[in-house]
Structure formats: C-alpha cells, structure tokens
Image (cartoon, rainbow, N blue to C red; front, top):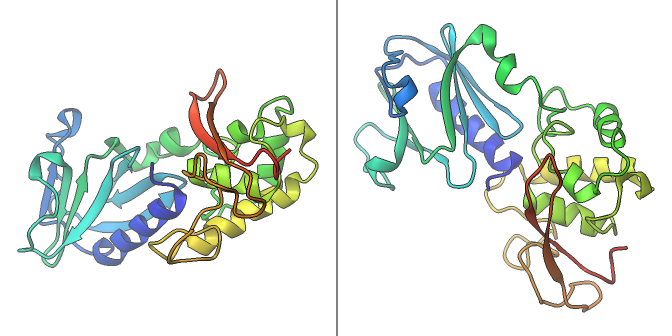
Length: 258
C-alpha cells in the first residue's frame, strides 16, 4: 500500500501541472459521481493529507485514496497511457496535461465546505503543515495497553505511516511491534524518528530506511527468514491488529527488538 511519502509526491506532482489550470475534460468513472462535470473550472490546488489527496476545484474537492493498487499518472495530451483505460477511475485534462487516476481505492466528490467530514478525523500529518509531535505523542499515549505496532498504523493517531515504516521504526527503536505503548520508554524519540524517516524519503522515488538507495533499502520489512543486518538473527514475520484495525503484516528481529 502506498504510504504517506508516496502520496505526498503524487500530490506535489499533480499540483505542479494542475494548479491554476482550467479543466478541459473531467471524466469521472465512479458510478456515484459519473455525472459530475467540472469542465471549465479552475483547479486551485492539489494537497496531500496523510494518505489522502485533495484536489480543490471551484466549490468542490475531488478526494482520492490510493489504497492498495491506486496511482495517479501524468501524461501529455497525446501520450499513450501506461495502464489500460478500463483501470482509470478519473481523467482530468487541461490544455497541456492529462492526469489519470488508476485503480483508486476511493474517489469521491464533495463540497469544499464538507472537506473536514472526510479528513477531519486524521491525526497530525507527518508531512503536513499541521505536524505537531506533542499532539502525536498525546494521541499515542491515550491507549497505553495498545500494541505500538498497531497504534503507529492508526491514522487518527498520526497520519501517513504504513506497513513499511511501522516495521522499520519499531526495529530502529529496538521495540517489538507487540509491546504495549505504555511500556515503550522512548515514545518521544520514536515519534521524532517517524517524522525524520518519512521526511527524508518524501522527495525521492526510491524509499530507504538504511540509507542505501541501490540495494538493502530496508532493515526488516519484507525480509522473512533473512539474517538481521545488525546481529544476523533470522527475522520473523507475522500479523498484528486489534478491534479497531484489521490484521496487517509486520516484520521484526527477535534479538534486536524487545
């Protein structure tokens, strides 16, 4: 699933080509909004909010969430699309650009005045202007019995982290993903690490948590059974979740994390 840094780059790239431009085509291929046509209106801006992308056009906001398979592509007016047309959920064109949202997990159109109803529940955005580590720390501490690996994925706590960052942050902090939040003695440092790590990756297409951009880009994520890059112990893999968040995969080192 795309994480906050991927969504951030998508929004920045979309904003660079759409902001201030007039739509010459607005083709929404989601049944509930198929009759919405904003052709002739000007795109004010495209902004990220956690894992959400908000396109502000006139009195409306086009809200998309990439979920597992979604992505936004940017093409020239006559360029060939890199994915089949049947996967397109939204096509927005200007005189110079065509933005296509493929396999978007969510796409909807709401009134600008109702924007808070779709993203107002989110915690402070790790890559947003509202980032506030004190609020994130307070949110994390509110449920001390909750597993830290579950709490980090809760977008109401802090917005932007996904499976990759959750596993890597827990490893780099020396904390088992299943450890209760209340037993994590370095919560402020963990929150700071989350912010620094995702910020370091927001402007580059290849995500790395090890500092290596060419190979060995993660410490534990996706490396089931491989030796820990620090101690050589075989890495473990499992699933964790709770009543609020569904089970999700996680990786860890049983020696380096306690």
